[in-house]
Image (cartoon, rainbow, N blue to C red; front, side, top):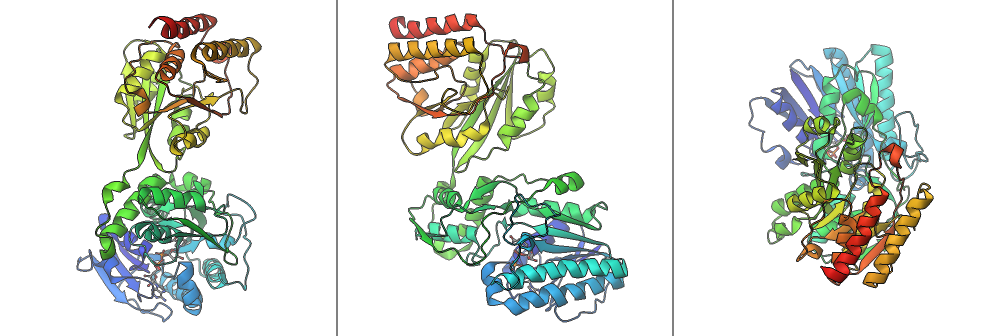
Length: 552
Ligand SMILES: NC(=O)c1ccc[n+]([C@@H]2O[C@H](COP(=O)([O-])OP(=O)(O)OC[C@H]3O[C@@H](n4cnc5c(N)ncnc54)[C@H](O)[C@@H]3O)[C@@H](O)[C@H]2O)c1
């Protein structure tokens, strides 16, 4: 199969070429290097399956060999590039697209046209679905790009209506990764270069504007699936990563990864800079079975590594600093067949900026279908440990702690009474250096009505803790306990059942660690819904608090 790629020497185009080789396709790349780079194709320029044509696609080209598929990716894409090349940008997305549609018509082949989330302009809905028509300023500084991409889409549709061309339009959202240019003006290379140089990080506006970033490997997977599937013919599809982050958070994230001492400076927001950008990718999920897999932290790590290795000025940068601190999430599970998959998925896709994540699931001898569900999970990113017999929550947590490798540890029950979105909130006091142990309090946050006697029991246990250990905590029994690995040093946990909660509290307090509380949301279950703790555990908890204060 002969695939023609326009913009093949660009950032995304060159990754696409590479992917097509692995599928043993013959690749004909066209590029005029206006924003591309010969280095991007140096690894395969001599490959017998690769043909490179240096040509400006605004000028028609007669192909002397059959073309079976066109991937039309040529266009300046970064705000700096299209500001410098506004007319070239408009021409490549109009006449360039016309020339490619003509090749598709003559060869009776399919064309996949790379469009952009910029067709949505400064959106007044979020996330953006393909049906959204956009909010674009036709005469603003970005209009050469936004409007020419809209024209490119409209022209493709007209060719399909008039000539029956088989097309797919891909609306690409911010994509990043190796082979971007360090000076291309996009936010990720900007921040990386500033951080690696320990120069001030420049944020335009107050940094509260959000973006979502897709790692290039994920995007290429999506484009490849779209190009191979018959179901995508005649479709417009968003491809991007729906995980949203503010520009300010992103800058802190990159600063941490680069171990940089850069300060942050704020500059006025450029005209027409969108305040929010986030794709709705439900169509891509349904049609392609695709969604991004590479977390922002991993993608950034690989990108920073690429820049540091490929730019002479960074040869002295210590790449070991790229190790992020890790959060281990310990999930004790017993008979949770109805919630376990949802719980794992939720935890897996909860991003914790600045940190790597490790999920450790301990099946505590379940005798419903939980064990089978976990055995069939086939997800290398999750550590799963099985207790042969039910030994209790405390025993499961102790097993989890013994295999967890994180710098920070949080307990996450699989019944989803607690919400992983609260991780960030709980981590903040630890990352800010204010605490080593953080409890999520159910009594100061948003919560579903708790049964009265449950509340009384919990309050009583907190009161006894405060009296015995001279603390002022509101929720000793909370399931959301987050602590640093260091805080466990010298502590040997012994509990097998729910008395692990007072044992942890007692031992942290006896070690002199102050407990920091943050409000968390809570949607408690009751006995009929599968809650396993009972009043007997309340007495055991009381005994545990007294035992570690007065005896042990
Ligand atoms: N990277 C992103 O975040 C992003 C987001 C949305 C859309 N896109 C789209 O994806 C495509 C590729 O973007 P990229 O980030 O790889 O940009 P890029 O600038 O790295 O690549 C574009 C390539 O097209 C080539 N090109 C431009 N005009 C040409 C012409 N007239 N004739 C021949 N070649 C020409 C350039 O030399 C360059 O190699 C673009 O169409 C862009 O609009 C990218």
